[in-house]
Amino acid sequence: MENKILFDWLSFTCKTKRVDINGVLIEKINERNLVELLGLENLQFEELPGVKGFKNRMYFDGISIHYNSEIYDYMWVEMSGQGCRVFESLSSHKSYSHIFKFFLSNPDIANITRLDVAYDDFIGLLDIYAIAQDVVPDVKDTSRYNYVSPLRAHSVTISDRGVCINIGSCRSNIMFRIYDKAAERNKSDSIPHWVRCEMQLRRDRAFEFIRLLEFENETVDNLYFLVLNNYLRFVKPDGDSNKSRWDLADHWVAFATSVTVEKRSLFVKPGVDYNLAKLDNYVENMSGGAVFTYLKCHGINRLVETLFDKYKKAKLNPKYKRLLDEEDALKQIVELNDEIYPDLSYMTYMLDEC
Figure 1 (cartoon, helix red, strand yellow):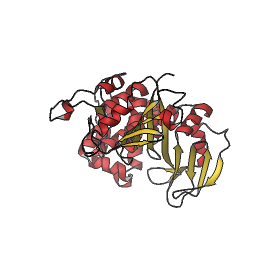
Figure 2: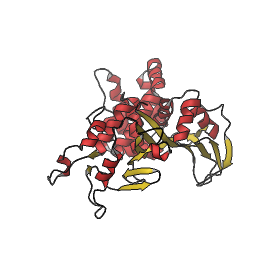
Figure 3: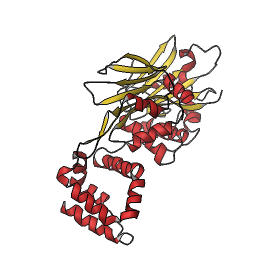
Figure 4: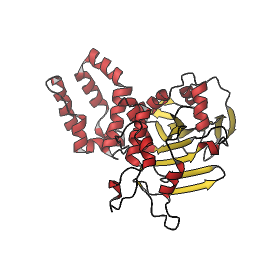
């Protein structure tokens, strides 16, 4: 069996309606729309009672769509590992990219809440016993560990289902889980070595991971190891008081450097920069074609006059007001090339007037 990387959990929410900038209803969204997004219209979902504030749930073999809530204004989709395998087999499009682009193009209604990316090792790159020894080298002093990571929480569990190591908290935005998959599946006799290194991403870290995949031409293999190398390194003690200067542990080198030695953080600065990124994605990737065609047909002045007649600052959605209230954000929005588009100086003037 060959080593592989796969998506092993996906959950997201989607609001039940889309409104315009003035709060006027544009579109209602229901659970069947989410079934269509997944390309699973031909499956017979089972109708079940809802959980966690939802009255209803549609279920099919590891895929749950929670809907109809008096508490929340959104629906909630969960795809477990089994659900991901069902999606990959039975979806009409079988494309995670199709789903990811929906999140990226619709930040006003869609929100990814969890994404698990797993590496399955069948050839012995991951020595789970050496890793467990590095995580808890001394059971009498669990504050000691031989790894470098911003993730401090850690644990080692040994049971009849094998060894399981957690680095990070299950509530944190990033967590790593390394475990004996063969033992968990009770297949140790038929599969000599099957160890999984699973990366669990939540909220903005999950969003940034799929953004890099879709908009920066990353491959999932390369991106997995870029993130891994940034957030987790098992090292061997050498007496230096600065653990970050320790060399990689011998048992970790082959795995961690099998694709790349480079690193990539998934941190996204909160506030204006993050909101601008969402705004840019929405305008450029969802509305870009319409804006381009409009400009070619009518020119920039008509667009500016129409928008500024319709949307004075006082009428803007609060999230857009916050952007305009930040001088640096304003400069990013109205940074223009007068040599190419001289008429755009008119737009700058009108922004200043509003």
